[in-house]
Image (tube, rainbow, N blue to C red):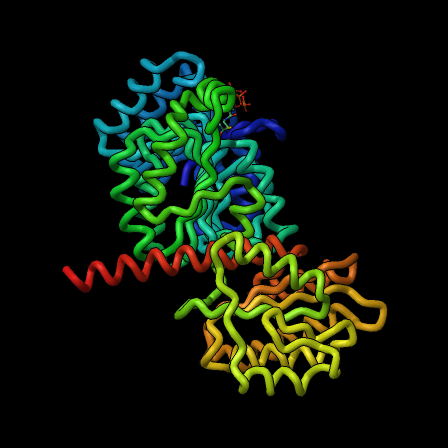
Length: 452
Ligand code: ACO
């Protein structure tokens, strides 16, 4: 890798990108380029790309926009395979011709170009953080493509808090060359990514996106947050990344046709990603809700029905299993109400009974904090129950934990164990609904493919 514009001054963007590449643990060779200095951050610095004594796969360009075209030429002449242009000052400020010229030069050498106007890229399997975002990213299997720098950078830190593991963060900025369709193609085939999440303001080629999305969603879920859906929002997008935000209805139709899940907020998108990235396989539509609080069960039942999820009927066999886990005043209807006295063993038994039953396809387990139960103990019993089942059972389990600091801890324990966990019944149900929606779509695709 090369960083061109690797400033000697801490705080400058080129310096911070180089620091992140080094400190995140990238194992390949790193070549800083800056004509004004011999060494940066302990690495030998080269006056230009032409002096770099190695084949460079990716050059990060962090010099003012007026110097980018020349630097791109140098990269091309030196055999660099791809460039990522951090610099702002192109189409987004009316300099579309300069942007076209930079792309033209890159193409002349057969180089792909990411950006311009980006904060960089991260790929956790290669321990590569070539961004001026935070150093640490929670590693995982969600590939995050973002057209917004601020959203991308802030969510990188937020994912650590929320335990959403990322395989990649790619800032696409003005998408002058590499666009969402290219990245969908890459991540659809990337074994290190199981869910693709896109923050999008506008598309450069709708047709190409739809073709790539259709192929990608047949392999893994694609979630989109589409910004600029209102008049004022699309005006803001135009001055942010120079994007044409387009008609909301057209985007909705395109996403529906291609199986892309459209989230209405950042929170929803990441909740869905958390559920979809878990190692689940949905085989039917029989949903069971287990709770220790009647009210939370009612809220979950309402949310399920409103989102088109059908709560399954209870067979005598299932009723019998759950009856043994609750006092006489509990309920063996769906939602199953274990009552407020339910402890870790009761949850263990209930999850085992539900997840182990052929009648049940998906489970939402709700825990409301009570004075006489320990949320972290309950979480550890839930995890234990799943560990026992995981070898054969891949049906979805989503947890809702409602309460204070101890419940928050319990939710984190569950997430670390790969079990999606949310603080409200509605969020748990919405995450489950996204799972249902994706698997229904994929089943339909598979059915049509086998018919043809
Ligand atoms: N080759 C190599 N190094 C060079 C060259 C060159 N041709 N020209 C200059 N340099 C060196 C400079 O000497 C300097 O190093 P020094 O500090 O040791 O002297 C370094 O490269 C950087 O050059 P500066 O002129 O100091 O530029 P600066 O760092 O101030 O700004 C930057 C460059 C960051 C690219 C700026 O122009 C810019 O575009 N900033 C915005 C970036 C941004 O916000 N991107 C979008 C993110 S948000 C989103 O995604 C929508």
